Length: 205
Image (cartoon, rainbow, N blue to C red; front, side, top):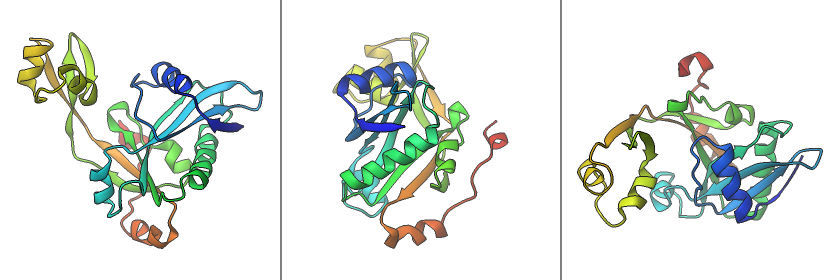
């Protein structure tokens, strides 16, 4: 298996065709994945996520933590967890200021974070339910997508109905399962001390 820096075209295609969200995230570093036959399998993307707010949550400066924002693969890879592990090694070399990487497993999709568990991430638990987005013209839309649609207007149900779809409704997410991968060993024990047991598949049902 081989990974190399991904082009914007590869990122866009993989995210729109190989991932259930069908959205292209804002990424800082992204890698194209090739299997042992040399076939392109998709991309793995790292970005700033919610940016400074998340950095402050981890008591870090912006740029010291990154989010694994997308694993968009077509199934031709030998092992997804191996692809993620290789991408983390590359990221550590190419972004030396990064101290911590975090990611989420989507409870709404019954994801428990198998990839993260297989690559020894630290599990920090599940978030509370939150507004995940809106049902617009019969289709579920993420908050980020809807915000872009109404541009500078305040994002709320009233404005979504006024400017996009008069029959729009909100939907609420069950939450996210948070995992972290530590690059800075001086802070590793801090997160081990507050870690929780890995969730099992039956817990996601």
